[in-house]
Every structure is written in C-alpha cells, then in structure tokens.
Image (tube, rainbow, N blue to C red):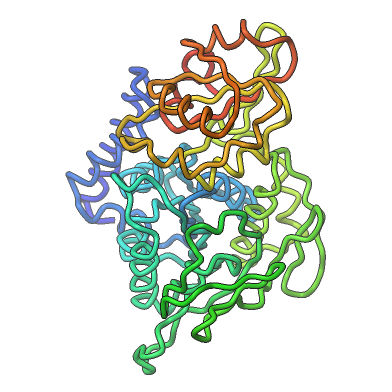
Length: 415
C-alpha cells in the first residue's frame, strides 16, 4: 500500500484498540472513521488483493455473513466485520484489523452497497431480501431495488447470488430490457430460501401489475418477470446444490429462516471453490451472532435473545421463539428509527396464549399495538423485573436494536 494508506491503517487499528480498552465499544466504527479521514481511499487499498464477498439485504445480513465466513474459512483466514458494523467505516476497520488475508466476507448495509462495490472490486455479492424498514432512516423498497440494479449494471464482472423468492431482488438482479447489449450483465446464481413476508412485493417493480403467487412460484400478471429456477434450495432440513446433491445442515441457530441463510452461505463459499460437503460441516460451529440467539442462564431462567427490527424480522422471530414467556422490548433511538408506526405492520397474534411482558423506551406504543391485536401483556420497567415476573424455565426475549443492546448490558455479560 502507499505510505499514506499504511499510516492510516496503523492509526485505524490503534484507535479501535484504544476504544475497546476504554470500554467504549468494539472500535469497529471509530477506527475506520479515523482511517478514512487520513486516507479517503483506505478501503480500496485494504481491499486490493483479496477475494471479497459482500452480503446485503434488509434482514439476515449479520447471520449470513457469519455463516459464510465459517464456510469460506475452509480455505484459510477470512477478514470480516463480525460485530455488524456494516458501513464503509466498519469495513475499513475490519480489514485493517485483520491484516493480510486472502479472503474477506463483509456485511453491507443495503444503502451502501453501491459505494462498497465500487471501493472493493468484490468477487461476489449475495442479495438476501428487500422489505420495509423505518422510513425516517431508510429508503422505500422499490427505490432500494432501483439503486441495487443500477449498481450491479456498473459491475458486469461481478458474480451475484440472489434470492429467487423475492420479486424485488429478482428485478434488481435482472438488467433492464433496454440495457446496453455491448455490456455483459452480471452472472446470477439463484437460491431459494422462501419468503414469508409478502407485503412489499405484491406490485411488479417493472410494470406496476399485480404479482401472483401459487405454492412457491410467483409471476407478474403484466410482464415477463417471474421467479427464476434456483440452483440452490432449502429442502427439509438441508440444502440442495446445483448438481442436485442434498446436504443435511445441522445448525445451532433456531428457525427455518436460518436454513435459508445457510443455503446462501454455501452458495457464496462455492464461488470461492469450497465444496458444499466441506462447507456444511463448518456451519454448525456458529452458535451466536453478535449476541443474537445467545442463551444465558439467570436465576433459574434459560434466556434466549432474538433481534427484530422491522415487520419482516419480527415475523421470523415469532417463528424462532418457543411457546414460552416472552419479553418484548422496543426503543426508538437513532439506530432503531424514530418512528414506531411500523409496529402496526406486525401481526402479534402468534403471541396469544403465552405470558407476554413489554419494556423499553416506547413500551406504551407497543402496548397499544398489542391491545389492538388482542394480546394480553404486563409492563415491566427493567429486565430484572421481567425475570422476577416469570416462572423458572425458558424466557424468550425479542427486542429491536438498541433495546437488544440494553438487555445485553443489563445481563452484564459480553455474548
């Protein structure tokens, strides 16, 4: 690297280490921020010479990145932003901290995908899904798909792993009909992981007609856009690869959604030459992802932590959670989005019949939503109070981002 980049990288590592030593976080943001201030091209310099995979989407990025890192790790050391700092500052910090590695798997915020593609010259990108998020901090879904599509067109050499079950992702990964024929479109490998949340993909992004669905198929009623045939798919408790071979996947992570994340990880690893039969063995080593899915014993309760930040991810969290006492926690700070009206897009009916407790800065917003949904609840002010209000045994905790971090801090344990 140029001298300026070497200095910037060294300062980035030092700043991150000081942040960790001072207990101000893991340093994955401040280190990259300072490094990029010294050398605005630092991310590109650090990425040079590495085979890089990017993982992006509204939900599942952190888990899929962790699984893909484990799978690619069959080949050697892999740099990754394991704490979920998924903007260029986090990528810069992660690569600087890792030193020289032949591979990198990076989680990328969907809004920054185009910028990170330009900076890293990535080998492969995995597109997981697109669904509504808090609109005070996120773009509308169709706008996000358009930005992805424009970014992919600029990188025809890129290998794309895309979700065949999400019409918005399929449209984003498919070049427009009037696209310059002199430019080869990106090569797309399709995976099927299912799509439980349909409320953002009933209208075709190409022509505005209705999207029709039957079983696992979907198609536009007004233009040729339809579900492509996937090369990778989830079947029963395993994954079928492009050769037709089926691989049993034994995960320590809950929920069918994580089988889909595992299929994506196997497809990403295959782009680096990792055989599925070798990669699948590594997936079972992932037990917790930045505290998500972690299980902690406290005062006779087995507590499991689940993160849910938007309607689609709450739907998946309900699928993962056991029918046991459940604590819901909602904040509305900057990382969460300040607008909690999205709660009315979530159907809380699956919680009926179990003990439900609520807490967090915006617990009363959640209380109104649960009351409308006919779900009885009890308000608690602290996590300790929640433990005291539930019997010994399983306690499920579902929280949005900062509420999740608050509960981790209250547990007084790094997960």
